[in-house]
Image 1 (cartoon, rainbow, N blue to C red):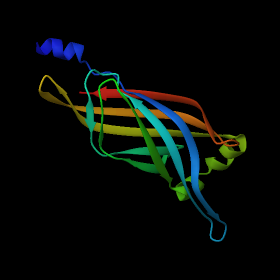
Image 2: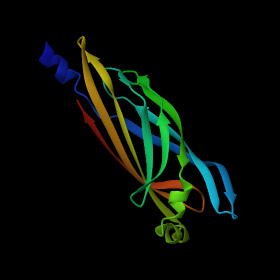
Image 3: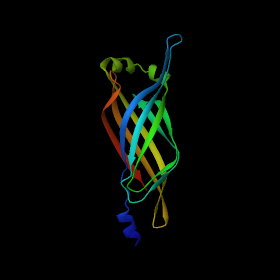
Image 4: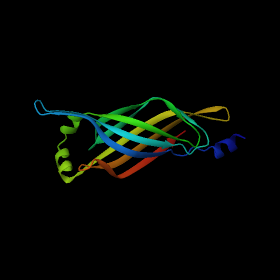
Length: 162
């Protein structure tokens, strides 16, 4: 019975889709040089598994050229079995870190800004009255078209560990 439970209910990777990304709350001044901004990201997460997943508080990290430039909290929640949940995540940009990167100028001039996100969500699933710890990570590499602020070339990798 336990073997049947673990074969039928074997964990599958969640499917994360970025619906839209928009610049929000842009505040810019030259003296002193200061930029504050946030990205509004609409994400949907589909749980293809036959059991629901309850997860703890987590964070989404935004990286540029190998350095952390943004962070967003992800509140604890639950995604039902074979359900899709929408999330609106607001990533606060650490503009000072972004501006100090010497690669930024050439990337903006080229019209493409390469970014990556990393998210690690831990939680539990219940299979046949047994609670199993699960850690799901996603890493997405994307390019922002600087002219129109849209995403292109998004590639994500997912890992789930029991």
